Amino acid sequence: MIFRSHWLGAIALSLLAALLLTAVPLPPWAAAWRPAWVAMVIIYWCLAMPERIGVFLAWGIGLMLDVLHGAILGQHALGLATVAYLAVLYHQRIRVFPLIQQSLVVGSMVFVYLGSMALIYNLLGSRRYDLDYLLGALTSALLWPWAFVILRDVRRRTTAQSRV
Image (cartoon, rainbow, N blue to C red; front, side, top):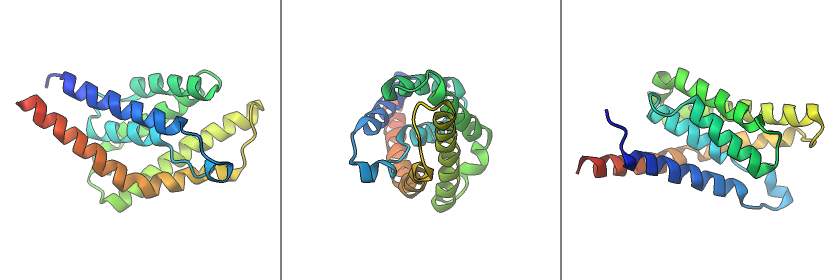
């Protein structure tokens, strides 16, 4: 298969939207519930196109997220690369799950991602996060069916455009 520019545009726009949603300021009471938008989008694209999207793209997006958050360079990159590796490794199993089971798997992957971020932040002392930081995994799991349907529709529309 040829890597078409339509696919690249859809992936780039969805990742840009995820980065923008991550940058939106939330009130302090809602900050702990922020979904891991970037991780969810990377998981989707790794499940949908594992031969094209994977660890290296996740690493690059993670570096952008490090700059966006002002975090230690490579921190989010490591977490997102781990999530992408797991998604690519188990993509054949996860894709056949119903959306409810996929939500549980995605929630657990995001939990690993957020847990590693909290661990790195707490060990290095740059910020201090409590266990409520991990609530974003629950929100990500709850929002996964909608994110999946929206991204699948985007992917299908770009597939239809590339065939024309």
